[in-house]
Length: 306
Image (cartoon, helix red, strand yellow):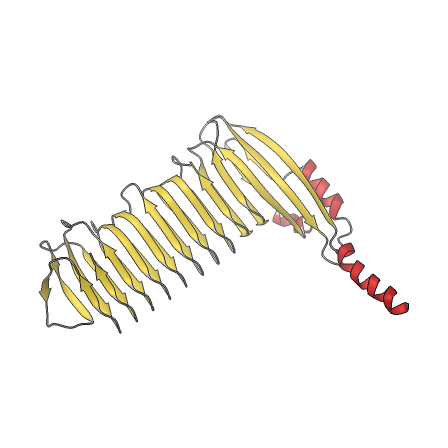
């Protein structure tokens, strides 16, 4: 009988320890001009989409979880209610800052906030999460910066000069109107451009797929393949530690190729005026009279040019 009682108590402890409190706040901020919005959350997602030109609408979903049976967070519900009554939103003219006050970090201990936001299309936007996904669409007239420590990033129909980075997670950026910089420590990168601009894309361990490059390019992966479609109107540099490289270029593209593979073949479907001696692992030459240099190198993988 005593064993049964102890077992019942041990099973009940996790349920008691997992105390939770939830709530939602809703705020609308009026604007008199172009907005600058900075939004961050320690743990939670950030979703941002376009709304009216004269206001920003913020909905925060607050989730609180007690840290454990012996944790001092028995006041979790009280802290959630405090955040709901006074959300972490500061407005100074048309500049809005949303996120926890790090000077009062105890208030946000074991609390996650998800954000659903609408903001004008012309907003200068900076979004960040410590752990959670970021999703942004339709901010096509203002620069977008998004960073997460651990989580995916998905953006669509955004302006050029975008900067996207995650420590661990994939990046998918479609319908980007110009220059972009993308970096992930662990995950795949997918970028589709609809306007000229320079591109930087880096994956620590994942593949990189880019369509529509018209400008300079630096792309690399520590252990993944690279696939790029576009027109090299400025220098391209592509490097993979252990993956294949596939380039798809227009037949009238003018460039100078320098391709090297440590232990893979080099294949081309374009006529090249070769330079130097024949080498199955290193090919240099000009295409259509030459032009900007396209450098492609991989430690162990093939290089294909179509």
